[in-house]
Length: 409
Image (cartoon, rainbow, N blue to C red; front, top):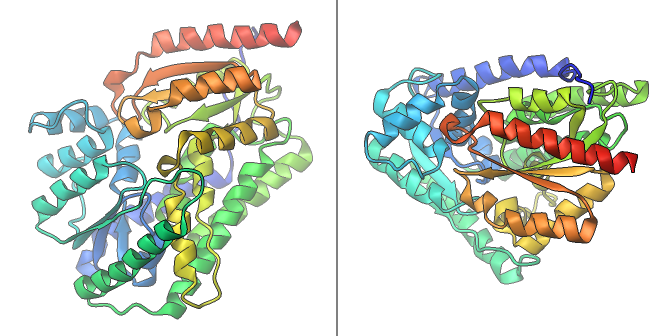
């Protein structure tokens, strides 16, 4: 097949560097300025944190920074030298390595006043956050989210809602700040706006040629993760959405000819975006990802009454890694149909076992029930030692050739 140049990137994406700089600078200055700092997991209800003017720091997002800056391997090894197994999550090893060495992309990490975690992404974060709490001798809150099969039961929703009340009490006690419903609803409104725009951005990728690929989505998800609930987040996605809509109207795509419309399952390979560029050069463009689409789930219903907490509990129960494989398949199948996906690439992620378990079953169902070819790529989201790029490219070549043969026959 004819080689192609890497895909066109978004102009609005250039602002992400400044957003990232301001966010991480803010995390370092917060303590000096008297603002409490909370380390939180990606599946934690951050809207409450912003409403109480507590600075949320995300070690998982820090792991993506370590990977993209190509320092994750050294930090992982520093954690392993202190007894942390290489089989553990590489995000966790990056964090612990940075703590032990007081080094990394930020030259150290902001000390937390409290650490907050939820079970809805994986159970690794519980032990990870326990280790952080012991190291910094700070209080820990664990939000327990029962695993969902089908739809959340009313009992599950009320169970999590009760914990949200406990969380507010915890935050007031350890931050010295008062929770105010009116401020919380303002944050909820901005979070809803950002999530709505994020879903609209995803939907615009149904166009042909596809106006946006995985690289811009992986980097572009930074605000919806770390800044959700802020005006900065909503403003950025409005600009991104407008640029994307203009591309669709003008018929501008990531590639001049997106020969293969692909879908990506699991977290990105943060230290090797060249791998995605290589797929672009072979005519493939990612039109959807299970990972990026998952952030549109955080939209909440409520009008200022206590009912908002029912909605918040329900939404955080429905995190992609807290639902059963049947529902994950239904979501994947719907996207494959709507985005007209030719092939599915699944990242068998050595670090994120919760995300990777069940992928073979999902792949078989996609092939047998939808007739869509699949390819499993073995790697790690942050530890480069687990990825053999040469063999992976060879398998991609064979996969795309097979997709090409399907198109011409």
